[in-house]
Amino acid sequence: MPDSTLERSLRPEPPSLPAPEPYSSSLIRPGTQVTRTPVKRDKFIGFARDEASATLLHEALAGHLPNTNQVHVVDFRNALTILAAMTTPEIVLIDLTGEDQPLNAIMELAEVVEQGTVMLTIGDNQNLNFYRTVTKGMGIKDYLPKPLTRAAIEQHFLPVISNVVDSSASLRGGRSLAIAGTRGGVGTSTIAANLAWYLSHELHRHTLLLDGALSTGTVSLNLDIPSTNGLSQALEMPERVDQLLIERSMIEAGDRLHVLAGLEGLDRQVDFTPESAATFLQALRSRYNYVVADAGARLEPFTRELLFNAQQRIVIMDPSMISIRNLSRLMTLQGGSNQATRVLLVLNKAGAPGGLSQSYMEQTMGLRFDAVLPDLPRIVPRASQLGNQAAALRGPFRTGIATLATALGASTTAAAA
Image (cartoon, rainbow, N blue to C red; front, side):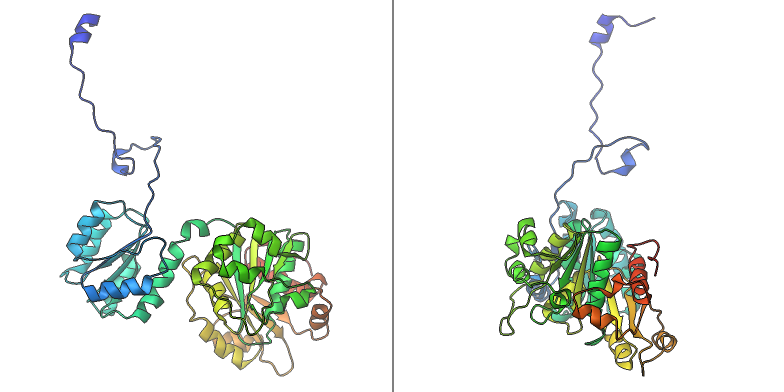
């Protein structure tokens, strides 16, 4: 018999249940729509068991983290307690020293940190197999054994931290390319200019050509356009970098091609930090589909930053033993966490008199070229001298540039020769 209104009113209300945690997948039925409130996370927190390690970490990382650079002197167990009671920062550095079973300790750590946290670890275990186990199979980004050195921290931890700090921004915007040569004269600037022209003119992408040589660059000369001091200003005063400054600093070289090239005096040292360089490059990526940076072969401070921060590194070689030797050295340069693991290789001046054959070079290096540009001593230099691009002419050089664009993923099919 149906309940009367009076009977229903006399029944006690069922106890209210707490709402499920928004991030607990075990409490959410499949198909349920859950609105998650984003929680702002700190960038970094570190834990070291001894004062000496904490001081060294603090000094090595100072200036590379925004607002905070916390390294606490606590043991692993206390570090777990602290992490369990807080919103996990984006990067956590923790000390495994003193743990009898460090692999189990890492599994406990995984229970208290949020998914997606970048984990860096230090400890007293110097076994190579331990390093491989934690970094290859347990989600640890990198591990350093004690005693720590500042050089080791800067080499292994700093590249990770510097990129994660700006990782949310770096996922947005266009694609950045850094083109380096194995030695002077291999044609790095020529290929950078022709690739930028091809991306903008043939593929209709908004492209910026950036000359990384602040005092000795040739990009503006090759394109027959003036240089500006906008680049040095942006690097020295990153707080002033905005779209207006970018627009004022650029020189138009086509409907969708802009060029940023400085020519500072040889007696002037441009004062900038890695952070200001990264900030400036991100601002450029927010404006353009492609940022093509000519990093040259001299590896000056700014060009090193270009190579580190670029999403794709391209190396230009000529058919010589010097190029093969220097390639192995270039490959040892650290790249950022958002950089493609595979470097694209380009052979320029293929078939030049006295040069090595393509097949011999590939066999010696154990690598294949992604694009090959023939030696055209009458066409390519003349085009550069007149401020034109050799890729505008139908022929093998244009085909090589189109092949490079395809290797970058900018074109599904190479343009017709």
